[in-house]
Image (cartoon, rainbow, N blue to C red):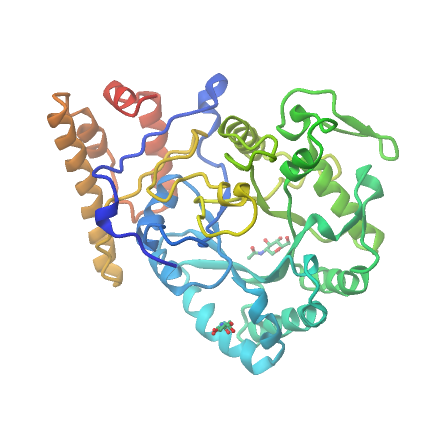
Length: 438
Ligand SMILES: *[C@@H]1O[C@H](CO)[C@@H](O)[C@H](O)[C@H]1NC(C)=O
Ligand SMILES: *[C@@H]1O[C@H](CO)[C@@H](O)[C@H](O)[C@H]1NC(C)=O
């Protein structure tokens, strides 16, 4: 990943983005447990230590990586943020070898599992392996997962860290109605033993779910309200009598049904990616910031309500939203480069009620105590530049005061920060609102 030069970053990165959930301003509060996918297919992203700040200030407590980037993991040491890390498809086959798997776990997982440090809670071996045509890779997937599990078990870490893989919904043969969900016949020989294994080691089944794709492919017959979690008639699965008011839940339940058809009711389905693009090519219906904001805002609200799907009402949906940043080097249609909550310069792409700060400078010296101190300095740096800007603008120093109220350095736990967010949002300094052009 390339690191943005500080000089490319605007003077003040105080991002104040308040609430889209206008009807229920208090909706996004402490206790929302969302994860974000921190994809890095871009050459213009902020440094990991800046991103560490941003993520924690958004009160996001779970991050998913597609690799095991040590620069990122080091930037989150001691933060309490939980990580899903990945082994890329290009590295899956090598992991079949137990010695390679052991070396990888020793180097990329074990160092981050101190009781207070970064917590790696899950390893995804490969991503959307069954979407491609690589037969060797498909065959190597479960053996690689087993080797990684064996390596964890050898170190006594198998209960601290789950091992699984993330699927695209491509693996579904049928998914409508949800109770009729089955996997594609050609992937069943791979997925059936995988599900047996996940059940045995109590790891989740991960799926990347994009109701957006369904809408884009058939905007005339897929009701927008149904994919955006807006009020709509929905549909009833006549086999189960269960009612669905949104497509995401129907997708998840179709996966539960497909797993059940393979004989398991004891494997959790989690959403390793979902999102909505804010921009797309001319032929990509629905890719607008307005719809992205509605999708993400309504999704956050469902997460906060700890809703389960109709088939698993007591299992709250577990979601990693995609993605943290727009990624300018992603191949494919324009929508692929526009799933981010943030632009690379730290400004929000749309206002979804998550607020965050991206510090303008990256002074991290990589040591633990030094890092904490520098993060605190960075915060004061923002404070000061906010105040300065205000004076230049002839305005008040409210921004500075508000930041001074921030009672703890940002290296503190997320929980400490949540209180601050709530307080700040209840009485946002009026000057900020003007200046941020809300
Ligand atoms: C993954 O594969 C790439 C390309 O073959 C290689 O450069 C890299 O070292 C591998 N990473 C790991 C962790 O094995
Ligand atoms: C592993 O996955 C299981 C099943 O979804 C879950 O109950 C457990 O909390 C996970 N463990 C960790 C460390 O996240």
